[in-house]
Length: 490
Image (tube, rainbow, N blue to C red; front, side, top):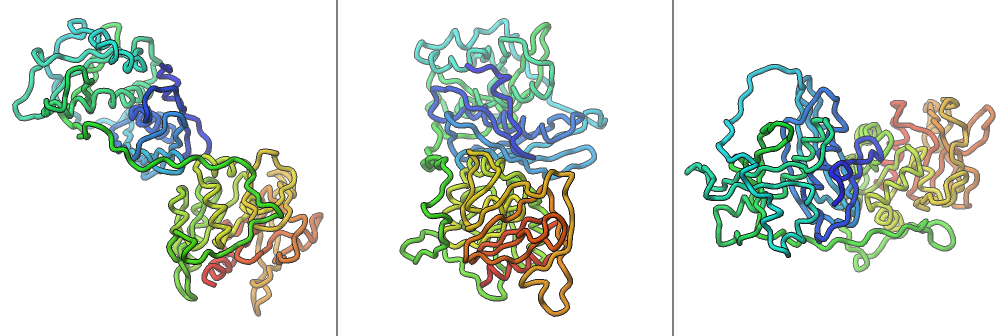
Protein backbone atom coordinates (compact mmCIF):
# COMPACT_ATOMS: atom_id res chain seq x y z
CA UNK A 1 0.00 0.00 0.00
CA UNK A 2 1.21 3.49 -0.80
CA UNK A 3 1.78 5.80 2.15
CA UNK A 4 -1.08 8.18 2.88
CA UNK A 5 1.37 11.07 2.48
CA UNK A 6 1.86 10.04 -1.17
CA UNK A 7 -1.82 9.35 -1.81
CA UNK A 8 -2.88 12.81 -0.63
CA UNK A 9 -0.13 14.64 -2.51
CA UNK A 10 -1.53 16.63 -5.44
CA UNK A 11 0.49 18.31 -8.16
CA UNK A 12 -0.38 21.83 -9.30
CA UNK A 13 -0.35 21.85 -13.10
CA UNK A 14 -2.01 25.24 -13.62
CA UNK A 15 -3.99 27.82 -11.67
CA UNK A 16 -6.79 25.96 -9.84
CA UNK A 17 -5.94 22.71 -11.68
CA UNK A 18 -4.35 19.82 -9.76
CA UNK A 19 -3.49 16.21 -10.44
CA UNK A 20 -3.52 13.33 -7.96
CA UNK A 21 -1.39 10.23 -8.25
CA UNK A 22 -2.46 6.75 -9.40
CA UNK A 23 -1.44 3.81 -7.25
CA UNK A 24 -1.40 0.03 -7.89
CA UNK A 25 -4.64 -1.56 -6.75
CA UNK A 26 -6.51 -4.85 -6.98
CA UNK A 27 -9.72 -2.85 -7.32
CA UNK A 28 -11.31 -2.49 -10.74
CA UNK A 29 -12.36 1.05 -9.82
CA UNK A 30 -10.48 3.79 -8.03
CA UNK A 31 -11.07 3.71 -4.27
CA UNK A 32 -13.58 6.48 -3.58
CA UNK A 33 -11.73 7.73 -0.52
CA UNK A 34 -8.65 8.37 -2.64
CA UNK A 35 -10.63 10.58 -5.02
CA UNK A 36 -12.36 12.40 -2.14
CA UNK A 37 -9.10 12.97 -0.26
CA UNK A 38 -7.27 14.27 -3.32
CA UNK A 39 -10.21 16.53 -4.20
CA UNK A 40 -10.20 18.01 -0.70
CA UNK A 41 -6.44 18.55 -0.73
CA UNK A 42 -6.78 20.31 -4.11
CA UNK A 43 -9.37 22.66 -2.62
CA UNK A 44 -7.18 23.43 0.41
CA UNK A 45 -4.37 24.54 -1.93
CA UNK A 46 -6.58 27.46 -3.06
CA UNK A 47 -7.42 28.90 0.40
CA UNK A 48 -5.35 30.84 2.90
CA UNK A 49 -3.61 28.99 5.72
CA UNK A 50 -5.82 30.65 8.34
CA UNK A 51 -8.91 28.79 7.02
CA UNK A 52 -9.70 25.23 8.04
CA UNK A 53 -12.12 22.72 6.56
CA UNK A 54 -15.63 23.35 7.85
CA UNK A 55 -17.79 20.94 5.83
CA UNK A 56 -17.87 19.01 2.60
CA UNK A 57 -20.30 17.09 0.42
CA UNK A 58 -19.08 14.59 -2.16
CA UNK A 59 -20.85 12.92 -5.09
CA UNK A 60 -19.45 9.91 -6.94
CA UNK A 61 -20.60 10.23 -10.56
CA UNK A 62 -18.70 7.57 -12.50
CA UNK A 63 -16.30 4.74 -11.68
CA UNK A 64 -12.68 5.86 -11.76
CA UNK A 65 -9.81 4.02 -13.44
CA UNK A 66 -7.18 3.16 -10.79
CA UNK A 67 -4.43 2.99 -13.41
CA UNK A 68 -4.53 6.66 -14.44
CA UNK A 69 -4.33 9.91 -12.42
CA UNK A 70 -7.35 12.09 -11.80
CA UNK A 71 -7.29 15.81 -12.55
CA UNK A 72 -9.12 18.17 -10.19
CA UNK A 73 -10.62 21.48 -11.27
CA UNK A 74 -11.22 23.90 -8.39
CA UNK A 75 -13.88 26.57 -8.81
CA UNK A 76 -13.57 29.51 -6.40
CA UNK A 77 -17.26 29.89 -5.73
CA UNK A 78 -16.92 32.56 -3.02
CA UNK A 79 -14.23 34.17 -0.89
CA UNK A 80 -15.93 35.78 2.09
CA UNK A 81 -14.46 37.41 5.17
CA UNK A 82 -14.81 34.33 7.37
CA UNK A 83 -16.11 31.61 5.04
CA UNK A 84 -14.66 30.37 1.76
CA UNK A 85 -16.47 28.01 -0.62
CA UNK A 86 -14.93 25.76 -3.25
CA UNK A 87 -16.38 23.34 -5.79
CA UNK A 88 -14.07 20.58 -7.06
CA UNK A 89 -14.60 18.34 -10.07
CA UNK A 90 -12.50 15.20 -10.48
CA UNK A 91 -11.91 14.25 -14.12
CA UNK A 92 -10.51 11.24 -15.94
CA UNK A 93 -10.38 10.97 -19.73
CA UNK A 94 -12.36 14.16 -20.05
CA UNK A 95 -15.33 12.91 -17.98
CA UNK A 96 -16.33 14.01 -14.48
CA UNK A 97 -16.08 11.12 -12.02
CA UNK A 98 -16.53 13.04 -8.75
CA UNK A 99 -17.81 16.38 -7.49
CA UNK A 100 -17.23 17.98 -4.10
CA UNK A 101 -18.52 21.13 -2.47
CA UNK A 102 -16.39 22.26 0.48
CA UNK A 103 -16.46 25.22 2.84
CA UNK A 104 -13.61 26.65 4.92
CA UNK A 105 -13.83 28.80 8.03
CA UNK A 106 -11.34 31.22 9.60
CA UNK A 107 -9.67 29.44 12.50
CA UNK A 108 -9.67 32.45 14.81
CA UNK A 109 -13.31 33.40 14.22
CA UNK A 110 -15.15 33.23 17.55
CA UNK A 111 -18.84 32.47 17.85
CA UNK A 112 -21.38 30.03 19.19
CA UNK A 113 -20.44 26.42 18.66
CA UNK A 114 -22.01 23.12 19.53
CA UNK A 115 -21.73 19.47 18.69
CA UNK A 116 -23.48 16.31 19.76
CA UNK A 117 -22.01 14.53 22.73
CA UNK A 118 -19.64 11.67 22.13
CA UNK A 119 -21.72 8.46 22.28
CA UNK A 120 -20.65 5.79 24.76
CA UNK A 121 -18.27 3.37 23.06
CA UNK A 122 -15.68 0.87 24.32
CA UNK A 123 -12.08 2.05 24.32
CA UNK A 124 -10.18 0.93 21.21
CA UNK A 125 -7.91 -1.23 23.34
CA UNK A 126 -10.97 -3.34 24.22
CA UNK A 127 -11.66 -4.13 20.56
CA UNK A 128 -9.93 -6.36 18.04
CA UNK A 129 -7.97 -5.14 15.07
CA UNK A 130 -10.30 -5.63 12.11
CA UNK A 131 -7.50 -7.14 10.03
CA UNK A 132 -7.14 -9.96 12.58
CA UNK A 133 -10.83 -10.83 12.29
CA UNK A 134 -11.00 -11.24 8.53
CA UNK A 135 -10.90 -14.52 6.70
CA UNK A 136 -7.86 -15.22 4.55
CA UNK A 137 -9.52 -14.19 1.27
CA UNK A 138 -10.92 -11.01 2.85
CA UNK A 139 -7.55 -10.18 4.33
CA UNK A 140 -6.03 -10.28 0.84
CA UNK A 141 -8.55 -7.67 -0.27
CA UNK A 142 -7.96 -5.48 2.76
CA UNK A 143 -4.17 -5.51 2.47
CA UNK A 144 -4.23 -2.22 0.55
CA UNK A 145 -5.32 -0.57 3.80
CA UNK A 146 -3.10 -2.51 6.17
CA UNK A 147 -1.51 0.75 7.32
CA UNK A 148 -4.84 1.58 8.98
CA UNK A 149 -5.96 0.00 12.24
CA UNK A 150 -9.77 -0.33 12.14
CA UNK A 151 -11.73 -1.42 15.22
CA UNK A 152 -15.47 -1.82 14.82
CA UNK A 153 -17.72 -1.88 17.86
CA UNK A 154 -19.65 -5.18 17.72
CA UNK A 155 -23.47 -5.09 17.87
CA UNK A 156 -23.58 -6.50 21.39
CA UNK A 157 -21.50 -3.57 22.68
CA UNK A 158 -23.25 -0.91 20.63
CA UNK A 159 -25.46 1.61 22.44
CA UNK A 160 -28.07 2.64 19.88
CA UNK A 161 -30.91 5.10 19.56
CA UNK A 162 -34.38 3.76 18.68
CA UNK A 163 -34.92 6.78 16.43
CA UNK A 164 -32.02 6.14 14.07
CA UNK A 165 -31.81 3.37 11.51
CA UNK A 166 -28.16 3.11 10.44
CA UNK A 167 -25.91 3.18 13.49
CA UNK A 168 -22.36 2.01 13.79
CA UNK A 169 -19.24 2.99 15.73
CA UNK A 170 -15.72 2.63 14.36
CA UNK A 171 -12.32 3.56 15.73
CA UNK A 172 -9.41 3.87 13.40
CA UNK A 173 -5.85 5.15 13.43
CA UNK A 174 -2.92 5.20 11.06
CA UNK A 175 -0.27 2.73 12.20
CA UNK A 176 2.61 5.14 11.51
CA UNK A 177 3.29 8.71 12.65
CA UNK A 178 1.44 11.36 10.65
CA UNK A 179 2.54 14.94 9.93
CA UNK A 180 1.28 17.47 12.48
CA UNK A 181 -0.57 19.48 9.82
CA UNK A 182 -4.28 19.52 10.72
CA UNK A 183 -5.21 19.88 7.03
CA UNK A 184 -3.45 16.61 6.35
CA UNK A 185 -5.39 14.92 9.17
CA UNK A 186 -8.68 16.09 7.68
CA UNK A 187 -7.56 14.76 4.30
CA UNK A 188 -6.82 11.42 5.92
CA UNK A 189 -10.33 11.39 7.40
CA UNK A 190 -11.79 12.12 3.97
CA UNK A 191 -9.77 9.23 2.55
CA UNK A 192 -10.98 6.78 5.18
CA UNK A 193 -14.58 8.01 5.17
CA UNK A 194 -15.31 5.69 2.25
CA UNK A 195 -13.81 2.64 3.94
CA UNK A 196 -16.84 1.59 6.01
CA UNK A 197 -19.58 3.73 4.49
CA UNK A 198 -21.25 0.93 2.57
CA UNK A 199 -21.47 -1.30 5.62
CA UNK A 200 -23.17 1.45 7.61
CA UNK A 201 -25.94 1.78 5.05
CA UNK A 202 -26.47 -1.98 5.27
CA UNK A 203 -27.09 -1.96 9.02
CA UNK A 204 -30.90 -1.63 8.69
CA UNK A 205 -30.85 -4.28 5.94
CA UNK A 206 -29.27 -7.45 7.33
CA UNK A 207 -30.33 -9.42 4.27
CA UNK A 208 -27.73 -7.50 2.22
CA UNK A 209 -25.12 -7.31 4.95
CA UNK A 210 -23.36 -10.68 4.95
CA UNK A 211 -20.81 -11.33 7.68
CA UNK A 212 -17.31 -10.14 6.99
CA UNK A 213 -18.23 -7.06 4.98
CA UNK A 214 -16.62 -3.82 6.15
CA UNK A 215 -19.18 -1.24 7.36
CA UNK A 216 -18.78 2.50 6.74
CA UNK A 217 -19.22 5.85 8.51
CA UNK A 218 -19.73 9.35 7.20
CA UNK A 219 -19.62 11.87 10.05
CA UNK A 220 -16.65 12.04 12.37
CA UNK A 221 -15.88 13.18 15.89
CA UNK A 222 -12.31 13.57 17.14
CA UNK A 223 -11.52 11.59 20.26
CA UNK A 224 -8.01 12.19 21.61
CA UNK A 225 -6.30 9.25 23.26
CA UNK A 226 -2.93 9.63 25.03
CA UNK A 227 -0.03 9.19 22.65
CA UNK A 228 -2.30 8.16 19.77
CA UNK A 229 -4.61 10.03 17.47
CA UNK A 230 -7.78 7.98 17.11
CA UNK A 231 -11.13 8.92 15.74
CA UNK A 232 -14.62 7.68 16.58
CA UNK A 233 -16.65 7.68 13.39
CA UNK A 234 -20.36 8.34 13.62
CA UNK A 235 -22.52 7.35 10.66
CA UNK A 236 -25.78 7.88 12.51
CA UNK A 237 -25.92 11.61 11.68
CA UNK A 238 -25.61 11.43 7.91
CA UNK A 239 -25.15 8.21 5.97
CA UNK A 240 -24.86 8.26 2.20
CA UNK A 241 -27.08 5.47 0.88
CA UNK A 242 -25.53 3.28 -1.78
CA UNK A 243 -26.62 0.19 -3.61
CA UNK A 244 -25.10 -3.18 -2.64
CA UNK A 245 -22.69 -2.76 -5.54
CA UNK A 246 -21.58 0.28 -7.56
CA UNK A 247 -23.40 0.93 -10.80
CA UNK A 248 -21.35 -0.06 -13.80
CA UNK A 249 -21.78 3.32 -15.49
CA UNK A 250 -20.76 4.07 -19.07
CA UNK A 251 -17.74 2.43 -20.63
CA UNK A 252 -14.56 4.46 -20.24
CA UNK A 253 -13.23 5.59 -23.58
CA UNK A 254 -9.57 5.01 -24.45
CA UNK A 255 -7.18 7.89 -24.04
CA UNK A 256 -6.31 9.95 -27.10
CA UNK A 257 -3.20 9.37 -29.16
CA UNK A 258 -0.10 11.32 -28.34
CA UNK A 259 1.40 12.10 -31.72
CA UNK A 260 1.54 15.54 -33.22
CA UNK A 261 -1.78 14.73 -34.85
CA UNK A 262 -1.03 16.07 -38.34
CA UNK A 263 -2.50 14.89 -41.60
CA UNK A 264 -0.02 14.33 -44.40
CA UNK A 265 0.31 17.44 -46.47
CA UNK A 266 -0.07 20.17 -43.84
CA UNK A 267 -3.16 21.47 -42.11
CA UNK A 268 -6.35 19.54 -41.65
CA UNK A 269 -8.91 20.93 -44.08
CA UNK A 270 -12.06 22.44 -42.60
CA UNK A 271 -14.93 20.30 -43.78
CA UNK A 272 -18.60 19.90 -43.02
CA UNK A 273 -20.01 16.41 -42.66
CA UNK A 274 -23.38 15.58 -44.05
CA UNK A 275 -26.15 14.48 -41.73
CA UNK A 276 -25.33 10.80 -42.17
CA UNK A 277 -21.68 11.29 -41.27
CA UNK A 278 -22.11 13.29 -38.09
CA UNK A 279 -23.52 12.34 -34.73
CA UNK A 280 -23.26 15.96 -33.67
CA UNK A 281 -26.45 18.04 -33.52
CA UNK A 282 -26.91 20.71 -36.18
CA UNK A 283 -25.81 24.04 -34.70
CA UNK A 284 -26.12 26.25 -37.76
CA UNK A 285 -26.05 29.95 -36.89
CA UNK A 286 -28.11 32.56 -38.70
CA UNK A 287 -27.25 36.22 -39.24
CA UNK A 288 -28.21 38.34 -36.26
CA UNK A 289 -28.49 35.35 -33.93
CA UNK A 290 -26.60 34.93 -30.66
CA UNK A 291 -24.00 32.21 -31.34
CA UNK A 292 -22.65 30.05 -28.55
CA UNK A 293 -18.88 30.45 -28.40
CA UNK A 294 -16.62 28.57 -26.03
CA UNK A 295 -13.36 29.77 -24.51
CA UNK A 296 -10.80 27.06 -23.85
CA UNK A 297 -10.44 27.39 -20.07
CA UNK A 298 -7.07 25.78 -19.40
CA UNK A 299 -4.86 28.87 -19.34
CA UNK A 300 -4.85 32.56 -20.10
CA UNK A 301 -7.39 35.38 -19.97
CA UNK A 302 -10.47 33.17 -19.99
CA UNK A 303 -12.68 35.61 -18.09
CA UNK A 304 -11.64 38.55 -20.26
CA UNK A 305 -12.44 36.66 -23.47
CA UNK A 306 -15.81 35.56 -22.07
CA UNK A 307 -16.72 39.16 -21.21
CA UNK A 308 -15.54 40.45 -24.60
CA UNK A 309 -17.60 37.83 -26.46
CA UNK A 310 -20.69 38.57 -24.39
CA UNK A 311 -20.29 42.28 -25.10
CA UNK A 312 -20.00 41.40 -28.80
CA UNK A 313 -23.36 39.64 -28.97
CA UNK A 314 -22.41 36.03 -28.28
CA UNK A 315 -23.28 33.57 -25.55
CA UNK A 316 -19.88 32.67 -24.09
CA UNK A 317 -18.88 29.82 -21.80
CA UNK A 318 -15.61 28.25 -20.59
CA UNK A 319 -14.69 24.86 -22.09
CA UNK A 320 -12.90 22.20 -20.07
CA UNK A 321 -14.68 18.95 -21.03
CA UNK A 322 -14.93 17.09 -24.31
CA UNK A 323 -18.74 16.92 -24.19
CA UNK A 324 -18.89 20.72 -24.11
CA UNK A 325 -17.22 20.90 -27.53
CA UNK A 326 -20.36 19.51 -29.16
CA UNK A 327 -22.48 22.35 -27.78
CA UNK A 328 -20.64 25.34 -29.27
CA UNK A 329 -20.66 27.20 -32.59
CA UNK A 330 -17.10 28.53 -32.29
CA UNK A 331 -14.13 28.49 -29.94
CA UNK A 332 -11.53 30.96 -28.66
CA UNK A 333 -8.08 29.67 -27.68
CA UNK A 334 -6.56 32.28 -25.35
CA UNK A 335 -2.97 33.13 -24.61
CA UNK A 336 -0.80 31.29 -22.09
CA UNK A 337 2.14 28.98 -22.68
CA UNK A 338 1.69 26.84 -25.77
CA UNK A 339 3.64 23.76 -24.66
CA UNK A 340 1.81 23.70 -21.31
CA UNK A 341 -1.50 24.19 -23.11
CA UNK A 342 -0.79 21.23 -25.37
CA UNK A 343 -0.11 19.07 -22.33
CA UNK A 344 -3.31 20.21 -20.64
CA UNK A 345 -5.31 19.40 -23.76
CA UNK A 346 -3.95 15.87 -23.51
CA UNK A 347 -4.59 15.59 -19.78
CA UNK A 348 -8.21 16.64 -20.23
CA UNK A 349 -8.62 14.39 -23.27
CA UNK A 350 -9.53 17.44 -25.35
CA UNK A 351 -6.81 17.40 -27.99
CA UNK A 352 -8.22 14.88 -30.45
CA UNK A 353 -11.87 15.93 -30.02
CA UNK A 354 -10.87 19.56 -30.64
CA UNK A 355 -8.87 18.59 -33.73
CA UNK A 356 -11.91 16.71 -35.02
CA UNK A 357 -14.25 19.65 -34.47
CA UNK A 358 -11.82 22.03 -36.17
CA UNK A 359 -11.62 19.65 -39.12
CA UNK A 360 -15.42 19.60 -39.23
CA UNK A 361 -15.44 23.38 -39.72
CA UNK A 362 -15.71 24.79 -36.19
CA UNK A 363 -14.79 28.51 -36.35
CA UNK A 364 -11.80 29.29 -34.14
CA UNK A 365 -9.90 32.33 -32.92
CA UNK A 366 -6.49 32.09 -31.24
CA UNK A 367 -4.68 34.96 -29.53
CA UNK A 368 -0.92 34.82 -28.82
CA UNK A 369 -0.35 31.21 -27.66
CA UNK A 370 -3.68 30.42 -29.29
CA UNK A 371 -2.14 31.42 -32.64
CA UNK A 372 0.74 29.02 -31.97
CA UNK A 373 -1.67 26.19 -31.12
CA UNK A 374 -3.60 26.71 -34.38
CA UNK A 375 -0.51 26.87 -36.62
CA UNK A 376 0.73 24.06 -38.85
CA UNK A 377 4.44 24.72 -38.22
CA UNK A 378 6.07 26.15 -35.08
CA UNK A 379 9.66 27.36 -34.79
CA UNK A 380 11.63 27.37 -31.53
CA UNK A 381 9.35 24.93 -29.75
CA UNK A 382 9.93 21.67 -27.92
CA UNK A 383 10.03 18.48 -30.01
CA UNK A 384 7.22 16.91 -27.97
CA UNK A 385 4.88 19.91 -28.34
CA UNK A 386 1.60 19.24 -30.12
CA UNK A 387 -0.51 21.68 -32.09
CA UNK A 388 -3.87 21.72 -33.81
CA UNK A 389 -2.83 22.34 -37.45
CA UNK A 390 -5.85 24.47 -38.34
CA UNK A 391 -3.91 27.35 -39.96
CA UNK A 392 -1.42 26.82 -42.79
CA UNK A 393 1.18 29.20 -41.35
CA UNK A 394 4.63 29.04 -39.80
CA UNK A 395 4.97 30.90 -36.49
CA UNK A 396 7.96 31.69 -34.29
CA UNK A 397 7.42 31.46 -30.53
CA UNK A 398 8.51 34.43 -28.37
CA UNK A 399 9.56 36.21 -31.55
CA UNK A 400 9.42 39.69 -30.02
CA UNK A 401 11.59 38.72 -27.03
CA UNK A 402 11.15 38.08 -23.35
CA UNK A 403 8.45 39.32 -20.98
CA UNK A 404 10.33 42.56 -20.26
CA UNK A 405 10.30 43.34 -23.98
CA UNK A 406 6.50 43.35 -24.19
CA UNK A 407 5.11 46.44 -25.88
CA UNK A 408 2.04 48.20 -27.30
CA UNK A 409 1.49 49.76 -30.70
CA UNK A 410 -1.29 50.93 -33.04
CA UNK A 411 -2.19 48.65 -35.94
CA UNK A 412 -4.15 48.79 -39.16
CA UNK A 413 -6.42 45.72 -39.21
CA UNK A 414 -8.02 44.74 -42.53
CA UNK A 415 -11.79 44.55 -42.28
CA UNK A 416 -11.85 46.66 -39.11
CA UNK A 417 -9.74 49.82 -39.20
CA UNK A 418 -10.21 50.35 -42.95
CA UNK A 419 -13.85 51.26 -42.41
CA UNK A 420 -14.75 54.93 -42.71
CA UNK A 421 -13.95 56.80 -39.51
CA UNK A 422 -12.52 53.73 -37.72
CA UNK A 423 -9.53 54.45 -35.45
CA UNK A 424 -6.35 52.40 -35.38
CA UNK A 425 -6.33 49.29 -33.18
CA UNK A 426 -4.24 49.40 -30.02
CA UNK A 427 -2.42 46.06 -29.74
CA UNK A 428 -0.67 44.61 -26.67
CA UNK A 429 2.15 42.13 -27.34
CA UNK A 430 3.31 39.93 -24.40
CA UNK A 431 6.04 37.41 -25.26
CA UNK A 432 4.20 37.18 -28.54
CA UNK A 433 4.81 35.11 -31.68
CA UNK A 434 4.86 36.41 -35.20
CA UNK A 435 4.05 34.71 -38.49
CA UNK A 436 7.13 33.80 -40.53
CA UNK A 437 5.31 32.54 -43.63
CA UNK A 438 1.85 31.75 -44.94
CA UNK A 439 0.24 29.61 -47.61
CA UNK A 440 -1.48 31.29 -50.59
CA UNK A 441 -4.96 30.85 -49.11
CA UNK A 442 -4.13 32.63 -45.84
CA UNK A 443 -5.15 36.29 -45.64
CA UNK A 444 -2.89 38.76 -43.82
CA UNK A 445 -4.97 41.10 -41.65
CA UNK A 446 -2.31 43.09 -39.76
CA UNK A 447 1.43 43.78 -39.69
CA UNK A 448 3.69 45.64 -37.28
CA UNK A 449 3.81 49.21 -38.64
CA UNK A 450 7.19 50.37 -37.39
CA UNK A 451 10.24 49.55 -35.25
CA UNK A 452 12.66 46.60 -35.39
CA UNK A 453 9.83 44.18 -36.27
CA UNK A 454 8.32 46.40 -38.97
CA UNK A 455 6.35 44.39 -41.50
CA UNK A 456 6.03 41.27 -39.39
CA UNK A 457 2.65 39.54 -39.73
CA UNK A 458 0.63 39.58 -36.50
CA UNK A 459 -2.94 38.77 -37.61
CA UNK A 460 -4.18 36.24 -40.17
CA UNK A 461 -7.32 34.49 -41.32
CA UNK A 462 -7.88 31.28 -43.25
CA UNK A 463 -11.51 30.46 -43.89
CA UNK A 464 -13.19 30.20 -40.49
CA UNK A 465 -9.95 30.37 -38.49
CA UNK A 466 -8.64 33.69 -37.12
CA UNK A 467 -5.43 34.32 -35.19
CA UNK A 468 -3.61 37.32 -33.67
CA UNK A 469 -0.21 37.66 -32.02
CA UNK A 470 -1.60 40.25 -29.62
CA UNK A 471 -4.18 40.29 -26.81
CA UNK A 472 -7.30 42.30 -27.77
CA UNK A 473 -9.13 41.06 -24.67
CA UNK A 474 -7.03 43.28 -22.37
CA UNK A 475 -7.53 46.63 -24.08
CA UNK A 476 -11.29 47.05 -23.92
CA UNK A 477 -11.45 47.29 -27.74
CA UNK A 478 -14.05 44.67 -28.73
CA UNK A 479 -13.62 44.92 -32.48
CA UNK A 480 -11.61 41.72 -32.95
CA UNK A 481 -14.17 39.76 -30.92
CA UNK A 482 -17.01 41.37 -32.89
CA UNK A 483 -15.18 40.39 -36.09
CA UNK A 484 -14.96 36.78 -34.89
CA UNK A 485 -18.59 36.66 -33.79
CA UNK A 486 -19.60 37.76 -37.29
CA UNK A 487 -17.36 35.02 -38.72
CA UNK A 488 -19.26 32.46 -36.62
CA UNK A 489 -22.64 33.85 -37.73
CA UNK A 490 -21.70 33.50 -41.39
